[in-house]
Image (cartoon, rainbow, N blue to C red):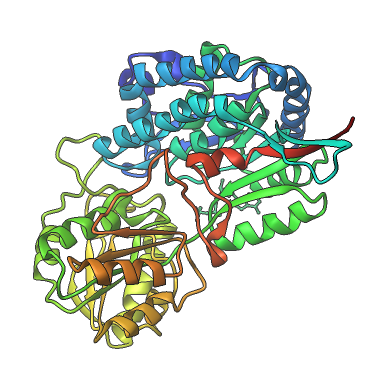
Length: 481
Ligand code: ADP
């Protein structure tokens, strides 16, 4: 086992037990956490169970009355202390994230800052949970609304953003006055537990935040989606798992937020600034080795892709903690084999392999930056979420055609448009059937704006005033006078 403590300045961040009702709780079985770049064992942590999840829900339920009755200002003060502790420990948190997830350290630092920004923003925003007074329909009645926290919130989060996908859910929930139970992905529990250690230090009351990491995702998931004490379930992950969890939530009519898969088109019109388009495409395609839900999946261009190929060739694969690394490993071997299978199938169907298409010597989870042209919409690679460092290029003739092709997917998360023509840009942004459209921009997600998808990409929004609203009920109050 690697000596993880030698990588950290603050060893209090290294937790190997689950956090339930204010206690760090062991378990008879162990969950092994490995470094996807080297295969080294990083830690063995308590393998939480469905029974642990039930206890965590009970703890969150018991903590709810007191936490929800605090003033918004009191909750904001605790959340700001949590935010500050994350900022103070950002380098350690980033190293831990790189070690268990694989992304280059610069990207991990970006994720920590991005993740923390949600805590700061929602701590501020909860002070503005205004209700309304409504002009009455009846002189003998006075009408108003108040906003109240929904109750216990359960969260299941993925491995691609082990820090930020937690803060995006937990921060607005806690700010609104809800209490939370989090199940992180089994591949990346250390970031979740470190966040909890800092929440404990910041003074979040016992039971307000609980983490149950474990290999029994289905068993833990059933508790988090079906326990009647849970008011709301929020999930980030794949569409098939999201659909299953929605069905489970139906049994008790839980509120739900779902951040599911995407299939983002990246459209480069002939009037685009090509250098800017290439930079934006690289950022959306190669960040996190292509393992983000807003990753570019289908690139539509008129022009040659020489400049994109040159930038892809300049990527440096390696361990995320090594200086200069710009492309880390994929999360596990299964993901590498899947991506390779997509490439082989596309080539067999007539796609042209411009570069890459093979494994890399750095380790079994590394895959070469790969560029395919001569693609068409019917290929599996164009219809499925790629989740790898694989850029797939198609050509198009005109605006109407490319909009129709871009929209021809069951997904509706993010889309990208590059054009210097303001009229066209406006038309296309409005016509694209996606929850988020970036025009002449690559990385767009921020705490202050609503992130989320339409169609089979999800329900609800994270971030912005919309992200806050997800955790309140609006109560209509009618007073006879
Ligand atoms: P990804 O492709 O990002 O791994 P998944 O949807 O498989 O997407 O995983 C996202 C999260 O969902 C992880 O925390 C994983 O453990 C969890 N998960 C996977 N399957 C289930 C399930 N049947 N019930 C509950 N949670 C699940």
